[in-house]
Image (cartoon, rainbow, N blue to C red; front, side, top):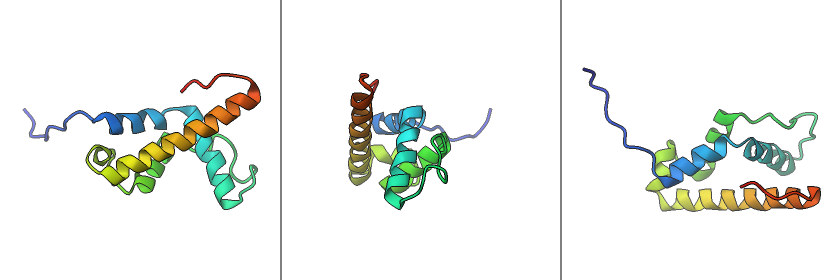
Amino acid sequence: MTDTPHRPPPGPMARRAGQLCHLERFRLYLDHAKRARHGIHANALPDGTHQVEDAADFLRTACGVSSSAELDTDKRAAHMLRRIIADYRRWHSAGAAQQGTQPCD
């Protein structure tokens, strides 16, 4: 028998953050957003640069938390996550409209 502490299952906001980080399209959004925000050329920051852990780091930093579990208890952090999701969906929908496809999120 081990004495490892029991961790409760992640709440809905932490689960959503985890799901986002595993979406290739969200990580592509992070690539595009970083290039636009910092004026970086695509050669310097190509599509596919952000990996799952990079996305998780981004979300934790942007939301001001050290653990995704805090997204379910910190109202400001949850609000920021919702803003990021809304921005991502707008970007995703705009890209889908340009390509004539439907968004998948």
